[in-house]
Image (cartoon, helix red, strand yellow):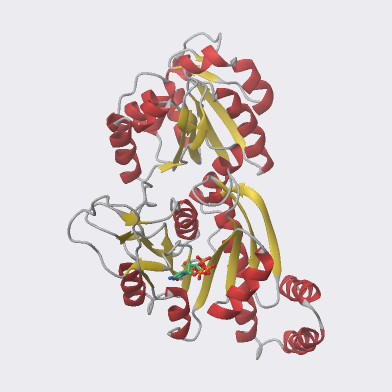
Length: 441
Ligand code: CTP
């Protein structure tokens, strides 16, 4: 498949070189188009050497140094016709604005208008430019048009400021490309209910008890499930994130509202993923007036309902239920106890004690725990982790489809018998190996 990679002018242009390599690993042929600004940061020669193709640099001259002729004058149309996906990384505020308004004043912006292929952009800019209402409005326009935005990460920026605006890692961008091309469509027909973010419990009209959850993991799961063909409902606590396009978003604030929203929608779901950081306690009394400072204050708290446990109690046959466990110590021990206590099919255990991974971070590491398996998912961007979690969930589904075919395949039947004996005999690791082997066979 052919990808056209538009590189625009930003410090992150050097990361686009790594991205070319990453895309080639997935067997994509990459045609690079550079804007004038990009050429201030990196030379076309670098991309020509990496991609093995001439780099297109301007509208009428075609490749660098090439004289204008009829072929070069209509080249944007030819490239538009042969590209399977247009990826822009890094995407500056300027190119985002031009795409949003339909301004076509160079090769890349003209190509955008001339192409009907899916578009993925990975913005990179200064935090104030990223947060500016003009940029956000332009992004909203593009999202509505179906453009996939690979959200920038948060951290130290080239301009010396700290905040959102760092281009996403090549791995996360490559993943968005695969999703946009529908390379994986293994959740087609599934109806997925995802909860995300933290809940807030009011103390008075202006204060609440809450937690640091940003919703990033849950939103990444919703996005991944949707691009793998599922119909997705996302029930979210307060979050600054943009929901994936076309998913049914239900906004809630308190644990009780989240519970109501989940219970109302869980019947039709085939898969429930509870990534939300739900408050365990709420104040018994909520003051109608703002609490005044007057020495020590004691707040009485009452436990909230455990939504996950309730979902498990009300589950219907065939429904898969996956919870999360946010832990700061004895991860596996606590995760296993939670799995048993809540009765979910799997628990994704993650360590929330460190900085840079877990709660409110762009990356996460986890262990996917079932009664019989424990699969390590090493640190990676949350969007990628979301796909890995879904891979494991899909694996949980597969033995069922094998069972459905039992009558038709006597050999599979025999294997399943052997497999069941193994299950009784063996511990979790060989169990997992046996299950995987059976699925491969
Ligand atoms: N959960 C829930 N309802 C609650 C609390 C938690 O549905 N009132 C769900 C979370 O969405 C998550 C799982 O239960 O999928 C585990 O949440 P976590 O906060 O790790 O555990 P708790 O059950 O709150 O237990 P503890 O805080 O004691 O570790």
